[in-house]
Every structure is written in C-alpha cells, then in structure tokens.
Image (cartoon, rainbow, N blue to C red; front, side, top):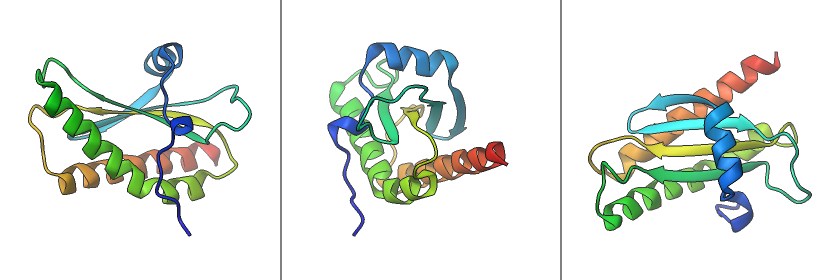
Length: 132
C-alpha cells in the first residue's frame, strides 16, 4: 500500500541546508511553481531519499493566511505524487528539493497540482538523462 505521508524527516528545515540548496541547486519553472533541487552529499542514517521545503513570497502574499494556504496546497499536491517519485529514484541518490510558489495570486488546487506534477516529471527526466 502506498504511503501518502509527509513526515518531519522528509521536510528540509535546516537553514544551512536551505542556503546550500539555493546556492548550488539547479532549478526549473512551471508556472506557478519553481522547483529547485540538489543532490544531498552526505545523508544521515535513516534520512528520507527526498527532503522537501515549501516557500511562498511574503512580498507577493502579505497576509500569512494566503501564504499558509498556498503552502498547504503545494504540500498536498506533492504528497499525492510522492510514492510515484520515491519508487522512481528508490535507492539511487538522496535529494533536497524546494518548491517555491511564484504566482502573484492564489490559484486552485488542480492547477497547482498539475504544475507540480509537470515540474517533477521534468526533474525526473533530467535525472534519467544525467544517469545515462
């Protein structure tokens, strides 16, 4: 049975790791989402193969309610796609991913989920091309 969870171990919360992600990471964009990724060099024992962070601009969404809603929608969109992604990269490498909401207005869940799905598919295709 697939596990559609997003546990604490799967979240990227270290300020240092987030800085490295944005400094050294690669990115791609599928409006309204930007995906930033980087291969994790030295994972700690028991670490999840993918660690995620979600971000929404305070400048574009001044109200915390709107930022939190956008993050919730992105987390849900990712959470539903996670088992498929984990099975694709299982046992190969460890990655840190960041999803940034770049839209200027809050869109509906279906649109956000499609964007996340397309961005993650493109990312997996790039990974497969790099391993060949």
